Length: 319
Image (cartoon, rainbow, N blue to C red; front, top):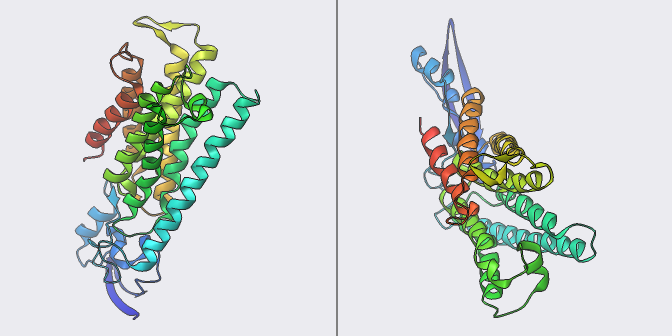
């Protein structure tokens, strides 16, 4: 049933009535009245209005359907939501399989170097997975449906990493030396981080978005650039170069800002861009410094980079 909510906004010298028709079952999540930004919430206090509208940092994640009090959904989601999420999961899994298979084909035909193929898979697969999140429903279980995608790859990596099955194309596309046991290290950590960010942060926080952007875009491009233009090595780590580290900082920063804009434009959270850019630059700088340290033998970059990004972003976006 369609309801009408009448609110009054306070402005100097004028008082305007705002009547908004709301149909929770039809409107997109970010357009529902319960999810309108505070600057559009009714108030008769001018100072309150100014604090809401001119807040120097206004990060507000869109609340879940239960917290928003939408009677049309429960925590599991109605039948339509579950059907949408199941379809989205199947679509993304099929797309991921086709994506990796395409690079397998290109590397087998010698149309692209194996190492370049591996790094492009590293860069693009996580970003495309994150970009697919908006096609899932507003159900509280949508994030778990989405996490089935990397979970499927997790099981695939374990099966082939333990040599319970053989897939030469998979091994060549995601490993450095073509050994099955390599699947149980970097590639496995990679998909675990995808699951972690989907379940813990989802579309409701910039922390997960930045962490994945730094792991996929930043760390991925650093290896490509470093191998081609990294003749000048870092003084404290001869395995890393100035070119690779600089490219990680720049690309990690740009990809992070781009993905934040993507989710912000879709209404999942609001950001004050001046402060956001500074915070993202800080996360990118610290993650780059950690990636450049001579600790790769002790901890994989697919663990250190996203975890450090999560910690720093959580602190930076906490106020």
